[in-house]
Image 1 (spheres, rainbow over the protein chains, first blue to last red):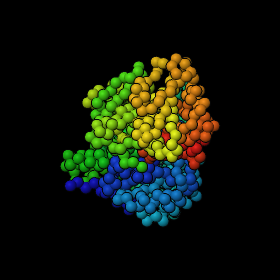
Image 2: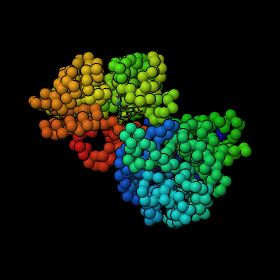
Image 3: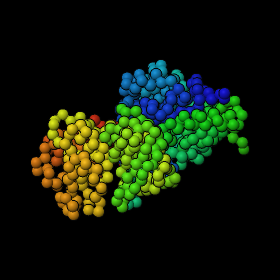
Length: 303
Length: 256
Ligand SMILES: Cc1cc2nc3c(=O)[nH]c(=O)nc-3n(C[C@H](O)[C@H](O)[C@H](O)COP(=O)(O)OP(=O)(O)OC[C@H]3O[C@@H](n4cnc5c(N)ncnc54)[C@H](O)[C@@H]3O)c2cc1C
Ligand SMILES: Cc1cc2nc3c(=O)[nH]c(=O)nc-3n(C[C@H](O)[C@H](O)[C@H](O)COP(=O)(O)O)c2cc1C
Ligand code: FES
């Protein structure tokens, strides 16, 4: 038996495999394909203080080895989550983590406070990196002072595990990671989507209603790995790595680069049971290399 | 919501039916129950330009053989790859997805199934279901020109078939909404799948004639299971997912 368990702040994960926000709904959508009790956690959709309609259709552009999305944080708001979704997801036999988004510090704090009251939610992932909403979102994640300010305010209001999700759309991601660590973040997760764009040459129009959107899928993996590696050298808190993970080998690469846990996003669209295969594959890898614990490979890139 | 499966289907037959349309028959170890109007998401392999699955309507089902047929128009690299699948090849499928048509029709009048181009695909299974429930089925199918007309024998077994072509080479000339059958149209419900402009024009006619009308939309999809929120359409109740709240909507739900 190999030990797959890891800890992120006070949060214990039975294995390091979670699903990425916005790609796995509230879990229910994938119930027929996975076994929640074999997952480290589910990070649910981006949740905001009020209902958001999101951006206009088209919100999706396919690109080689990936996709651009411009969903724009469509969700029914935190009160709807607490009343209508929490009663179901709290019974899942896995960690359910809420991804919290906002357009102002007050919104982030108010949303985090409401989630803090939910006994069955052991952690939040603070999304300061959504490229698809005009005000806020990514604006907080692209400046050290703004990132520090929002994390400081949320830290006061939220006393469980606080993961801060970083934007790759910055010059120096390690600097932002250090800034949020200093304000009490228990962990950082990275990367959110990379700002991109698609054009239809025939119509001379952008493919997405918002012109630009967020790039995800295997095409972003090299960028994500590089950033996890840089951040792992800059901070002491555990890192949750994601971006383009399609299989167990991809996941192992993130552990070697310094991630303590990983999230799987876009891959769920191609194979809705991919998380189960990644868990099995990580276990096989560890056995094959005679490791007893996943912890033995975290950050163990050989230079 | 019906239980969803991810299964490898075995290609039993894959044949061109016109120069751009092909019919693929897949067989499964177990075939789940499929409602008319539901669809499948097919994985495309070995094609660097294609990353996402492709949504395709379920055209016909034969539960006794655990087989289903797909009617596919080759438009790009994904459908091109599907067209090259040979007998015994496997295709990975997630299905059945979506809500399907509401075949529970109270009034004892005939029903009208209106299709344009590849939109006629889900109407065959739908016609079979409705006619097995003892309902009289009329198909009204629109094509550009004679060469585009798809094989219609199976449709003719199920109901009466009316055709329009834009150039008038076969059937009535013009669009489906120009057909002479509208003069004394008296139907319990209209069901439709086809290009959006066709369905919008149809919904205007249905409203004028006060006939209940359902349309099946074909938005771009990523997950197909209601998780990514990429496939939304605007409704009177805000954005709804075409993959789970649809693909079939009553026109009263849409701001058309
Ligand atoms: C619920 C649903 C059911 C469908 N049922 C069928 C079916 O039974 N048979 C069938 O042949 N097709 C069906 N489609 C459309 C089919 O999914 C697309 O034609 C296919 O994804 C194109 O893939 P491709 O890689 O060949 O082409 P791509 O390279 O993706 O596209 C080629 C061209 O087709 C256009 N296109 C792609 N997808 C769509 C779409 N969803 N609607 C309109 N235009 C599109 C693109 O804009 C582009 O111009 C359905 C779509 C949906 C959403
Ligand atoms: C359709 C879609 C919706 C997303 N929504 C959110 C969101 O609400 N909040 C968030 O923090 N990240 C969101 N993301 C970003 C993912 O969680 C993830 O960071 C990104 O896709 C990179 O990982 P991947 O390549 O494995 O998908 C979304 C991504 C996609 C594709
Ligand atoms: S395709 Fe993902 S929600 Fe419809």
